[in-house]
Amino acid sequence: GRPSRAMINELLDAPTPSITTIRSRFSSGAVQQHGEEHGEAPQEESSPKELLRVITSASPSPEEHLRALKRLSSMVAEGCTAKQASELAKEASNLAGAVQSTIAARLSLCGDAEEYRIVKHTIYAAHTIFTGVPGVCPEVGDAALGGLVEELLLRLHDPQVAATEAFDVLLRGMNELVMDVLHQGAPNKVYTLLIRFLYEGAPLSGGKESTPEFTDGVLRCLLEMARCMQAYLPRLDVDLLLYDAHMFLVAHPPSKYRGREFRPLRLLKTILNELVKLKGEGIREHLSLVPVDTKPTLCSYLDLVLQQQAAKATGSRPATASGSPQQESLTVVFEKISSKDKDVAKEGFKLLFAYQQSHSDFSLDRYLSGRSPQFQEH
Image (tube, rainbow, N blue to C red):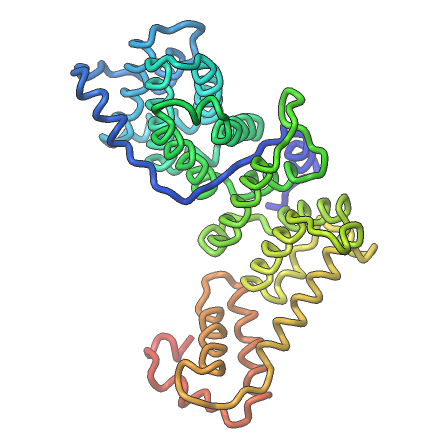
């Protein structure tokens, strides 16, 4: 259902986080080989909650910490039961908090190889769980998610970490965890956290100052979210995302930055362009949380993008061979018509009608003749 005002306020009151992303895949080989070298024996059966208690306890020995981490990883790798998966989802925020606190505390002990080893196993365990049990990452609470991604971004640009022998492995692992959050997390939580972090003057937790590298990481994450929007569109609350965009535009009106570069605004426009491309005119039905009567900047920008999209779709183009602009335009139209999203499909039919009106030589029957009977009937 539609998010309540209380839910929105809860999201807005969450700690400000940030995320970075470099699209590299995390190889766990270095982590796994470490365990094989030391010849640890298979661990006894434990519940996820008990294992997390060991990891978050005040002072577990390195051996106990590693044993609990490896048991968590193998539990998922071997195929956890429905009960274990459910318990992991319930403990999602505790897991994220444990990862954040482990990275923060143990990377501060510079030069200790054993501490770096624990951090590597911690990152690998979180990656294995987030990707192996789909229901876990979306359940991470706002505060825990914010704390985790902020810690990851800080450490990715930490000169102390960069000076360690384990830096390459840690870098790959932390980047992979960021990608897990972007791809596996609840998209609205991720968007809200990222957009709120881009507010000018927004501090990090503990009053730490933001840096250009930190902000660059957030922008890279938003670009990745825009790039793969179609994949998570069914899980996205478009109304809430438009509300986040509206609030940002109120705080940072484009007129304030006329004549100078403000990258967050440009990135926000990229996200809105992608939304309009996917939802078409249906985007107007998702403004329930935006005060449209005041004619905010968001509505003006959406109108402009919709006009540009309509002009592009109905513009007169010469009828030429396959691969021409005309053919490419039709391909986009029929991709929309085939979408499982009703708003997108509806927009596709509108664009097709407009295309027929402006291309008198276009024959729909001839175009459909090579398609499957199911598609023709649709």
